[in-house]
Image (cartoon, helix red, strand yellow):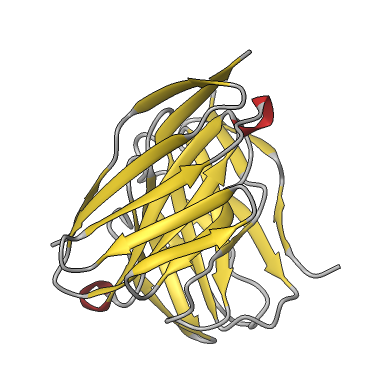
Amino acid sequence: GQSLEQPSEVTAVEGAIVQINCTYQTSGFYGLSWYQQHDGGAPTFLSYNGLDGLEETGRFSSFLSRSDSYGYLLLQELQMKDSASYFCAVRDHNYGQNFVFGPGTRLSVLP
Amino acid sequence: DGGITQSPKYLFRKEGQNVTLSCEQNLNHDAMYWYRQDPGQGLRLIYYSQIVNDFQKGDIAEGYSVSREKKESFPLTVTSAQKNPTAFYLCASSPRDTAPEAFFGQGTRLTVV
């Protein structure tokens, strides 16, 4: 089987830096993706890590350590509009190569 | 503009009715997916299709049915056998079954009245 774990909630203030962790257990790991979802909206793709290391896209960065089955999403210079839910997801060879999503982390950015 | 279109945005169903949710994409993607999302929860896979005229059950397929007669269309029918259908339904597509990114439609919120 497969499972992903994320913190359920994170709170931070504008301008701060926040890290959202994701641990996964799957024998068919294919890469770690991150999605953002505002209330009532559709998830939108943020980043992908297929190899170990850090990927940077503007204010957002994502990290993967395959040996530790662990990754994180780093959000810098937080803005109010970053308040949303963030999901990690893996492609799993043993799951028809489909995405398995984590339970999501709700980020609240305070003024 | 390319993208995924789901309709309707809101849908109300009476007990015992079947309803069909539409999902159309013009991205020329091979793979399409249906997910269910309950309040405060993650996404659970209902059905997926990696190629036209083929589809597979996901984790929670009971009470749902799909078809994939055209590459761009992947409608989901919520049947009367689905006992708790009130949820947010999301359709997604991906260029291929190994691509790292899924593109989502805006979702359909289904409520049983």
